[in-house]
Amino acid sequence: MSDVRRVESAFGPRTWIVFVSSLIFYLVSSGGKQSFYDNYTLLANAWLHGSIAIPDPGPAIDALKYMGKFFIIEAPMPAVIMLPLALLFGANANETLACVLCGAVAVTAADVVLRRMGVSDSARDATLAFLAAGTVLWWCTAFGAVWMYAHVAGAMFALLFLAEWYGHRRPWLLGLLIACATLSRFPIVLAAVPFVVWLLVETPPERRWRALGSAALGVAPLFLLYAWYNFARWGTFNDIGYTVWYHQDSVGSPTGSPFQLQYLPFNLYSFFVLAPDFTDYFPFLKPGALGVSLTLTSPALVLAFAASRGRESYALWSAAVLTAIPSLLYYVNGFEQFGMRHSLDFTPFLVPLVARGIERTPRTFSGALVAFSIAANFFGVWYSWAYHAYHVVP
Image (tube, rainbow, N blue to C red; front, top):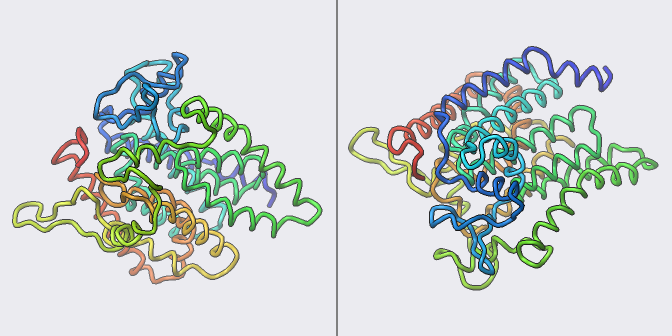
């Protein structure tokens, strides 16, 4: 089957059904409300008015005051997505709606990935249900605050990258998509390493330099703009925003890097052990401000271990592990969240492995894990609505 047929067949009626269904699902879950933490609305409007700094936003927005001006430290790509809404609605542009759109595209891209992988219909449906409602993608998309929106946008671009990888595999587009993912969530840049190796292994020797050059052409424009953006903010081509923030943060340190080995034990505890508090009143479980471990919110991720060994699984596992490393070394685990929002950086690379695992495990076992994951994340979304309606971080 030619690449053209593969791409055309991926965008049939089912694709549109998945997109529209996901869009409605996430829109209803979010209530369509504007997030109070709308950093990207502020940033997009600042750009449209010819400024890279934002007006003093007050203490609720974690903007960094540097050289007398306020700057958004989060990665800039989600603000680029916000530009059409900001152009139409100005300061009233709804960041949550942009997040909902990204969430729906992410699920749709995953559907394309799974179809191009050739997984069975039942495994495809189960994996999509898990991604859409059994991971923190649901909660983050429904919340729509700056941090969650960045994760959702990063996951969307990562899944679009995988859709292209399993499709035409055009190096320039792969480079562009991984750059967009990185400029949504910086750790995703590390996922490029195993895919570059995979690309080189499967490219004839005489075409390897051409493939690398084409990929670089996809990456270069955005990273040149990003370097300029950093220089305009900080006076250096490096992005020092998070480091300066760490030096000023009450839970940070006045010196050093926000990424240190001393933070690894707590982050491992957060990802794999951290549980909600038990109470003697309804609903008897109270998620803490630090979140809830993946073990208790998305246990179906364990199905990735059942995928067969080979080039595909080695590359995807490497991408997931490399992407997780910055979060495991970071000085906070995400704070003020349900689940582990940092897991959304590497979840896209586990989705194909989960699908392969579902095909290789008993249906009752995989179905139970997916069902538990969906129930756990339903609880998180319901709890956030029932107890603070997303007006404040839990």
